[in-house]
Length: 355
Image 1: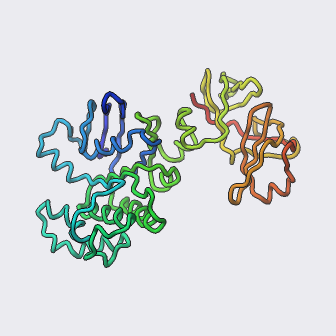
Image 2: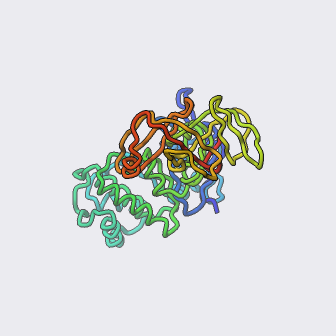
Image 3: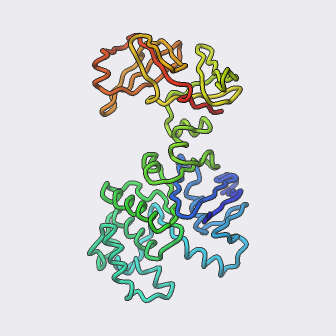
């Protein structure tokens, strides 16, 4: 069941288009990562989802209710099922306990009866014993965790997070990430905007790449290994992107002519295309070897750089540059230097093709 559907959401500020025909369907209990460059419209979209702003056009459906055509009373009831934590949360006057109890208080619940529950929530976020502290005295990381507790105490069905760990210390980041993962167990749906691509892969079931419109949505594996267009490929850091012209080849293969190479792919696409091959899918050898890989080319080392435990080796093949990751041991065993000749091999199934 979809907890939220956005259909054709658009928004302008002073004639500047912030969102354009945004469409999303979010299943209940899903963690969705909203990823995009600065100024792409992430915060605006989150504020629209939280009903803090109204789109210029489009439709919002929450639990099968047409939100924008609902009465004011119905919208208030819907908003109470949604909780949002801002990148820079507001701190109310008073203690941490009073801040966290704000939501239950305005809903008419007895905050004294919730003291134990609030203390448990604070404890889970690494803020045990902070109940009587002045909220304005908290550090940035502590404030963010308090704001998360303030929202979670209301048990929202949908939690909206705007860069929840931006500029936080590692301890605060770890605590917040663990809470986000824990929420999946009680089927709380989470939509989180983040600049951290690795965090998005780690925490989210689905990722939506946004730049004023949705360019791609899918599992982290699909988005990061099979981008649908050049913008997504560049944004998520896909390596070995090569341009060419694809034509049908034998046995369900595509042949991509780059003007200097013919690269075979098991994906069928015709016309001007981009092809990408993940560095980890490329093998190298000093001599030509017998292999089942349809793509085998001779080249030479053009660049060597070290990155942690791996060595990044760039190989020039007839003017096309391929990046390969090697362990330090393999690199040393092969005794590679700039200009070293070698062979690269990769399967047709490793070649992803997109427009």
